[in-house]
Length: 416
Image (cartoon, rainbow, N blue to C red; front, side):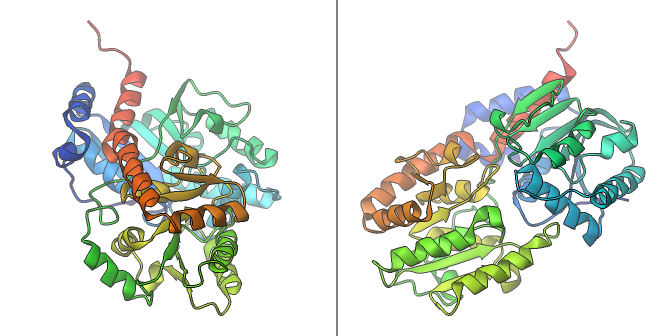
């Protein structure tokens, strides 16, 4: 059977002081006709990465407003996750080969998981490519409406991977993308929704944290808090470009010799490539002990990431591809300016010159980091603007509202 994820309860009312009465009232109005609806979310992992983080909040909030929601995770061995990692990269445009053996592995594990599905649901939301073939192998049984939520940038996919995936997408009633530009070529859903990801402001990663506690936490990992700190938080992944971040840091260090860099990552169960790229990152860092490369197996989990983001002077997200970039959202929420790659969903958050800077090269990244390190007043101004931008658009109640809107549209108007 698929693994059911155990979740703590959450109350929508706890978010009212943050997002305000108007949004809460809209959510309650949208939820009323959907009360009792059975909702199943399915993805590939219960930890590591933004999808799992969002589901830990979204599913309990759906329950709180009256939906019967749950979250299940598919089963798979390394051979499956190696294939789906290649699919992830290929669908974002990487030049990779898709072999017949890879296709067979993908089909086999999706068919196996489809056979193990149980229950009847009004809405089944499948997240990302890993389980995308489930409705095909279920003949759509068990779900009145199937929705595919694509969290990655499929605007310019590798044609071989896209042509393999798209026949399975025809089994869906709706497609959900972060940006309209992400909808890949030649695919049409009966219903298309554009929904941006969000963060939970009350989670361990984003809750208020006294600055002295944050400083003690970061100092525990060997950083000198009397010196400036650059930070990137992301998986160890070529699309996140940690090697380019190190190169930019070295340009900064040539002018600010006491600057430090922390690269904080998370090793996810569905990302076997992560360890390989972690090793590449260590090799690029070499013997520069002002570069701190850390991950969850070092004890850097959500509370510690919270501390790092609050202590950093400048946060970097130098992605080469980025579906959205929740780490950008997290940093902005903590009033930190972000120097981010001009790709994907980052420009939705980093309003160039207002909440941070958008860059296209190592040199531009270094230049903007230097500019911010030398201008504390500008950092503070951008930080305040960034937090307000997130408060208005990218918090968990916004995500709940947008799903309720979509469910309501799929059900249609109630009979008069």
